[in-house]
Length: 350
Image (cartoon, rainbow, N blue to C red):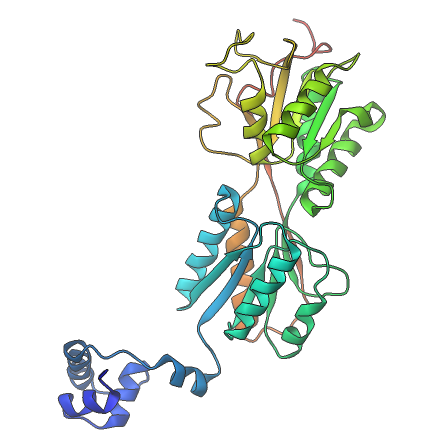
């Protein structure tokens, strides 16, 4: 039989209420008595009945997190930051991956709600979140991260400056003499991909060419096909802008001019199929980007900062904040390492 609070009281020689106060960190117990109770708890192996505590407090001390893919370095960084904040508040984190499937997102959210999580942080896969309204109406706070909720849902949201980051990347390449800049992005139905395409397009202005856009995701086959198509254009690109970290890695693996592969790699340059050199800037930093030759220039987000901001917003709501919902957009930064600084045909000559 598991030891009970009554067993602890008997072992410590105190009243049941005294044990309850010690277990629940309530004041009013002499330090020597509290130490005697804690010693009895340890000796007996007593653990608090969480179900009873939930019935008394109405809180489970858990929060739920739905992300796209726990294996993605961006989302693992975000998840760890959320967990750190949860621990600071004495809560456990339950998380799951939607795999970019709206149905799976809905299943996970409702499963967490069925387990009575105190609040939710959601990286949405779809744009229909009507299923969340009953949970919001019963007082469950929800924060969206990385992507906004669908129409009609008024909740706190934490985003990155996606369009601005893409514009920064394009302007950087323009400044190094490139005019034919291709964009390889994720599916256009994904908010972040669409925003980065918007920033890319606006920064190019009249130089924008639809033929230089490929939005088919990061699967190796489609990426290789798109690189071959771009290389075969009458006026192929001299620079590439890749829309997320997974795409950048897939592109680097597909380019024939990378180190260790048969192909025309020389003088620190990446090359398209057929041998034309290209500059490269990627959205999202990734591990070992600085160790390649050349190092990969990136527009870096702060996934840990996003996770922490989302979690702090959630716990502020759990703490009683009833103010209007907010939309926080986190800045991004350019990290030049070499691949984005290779001169293009219009670079100023010394």
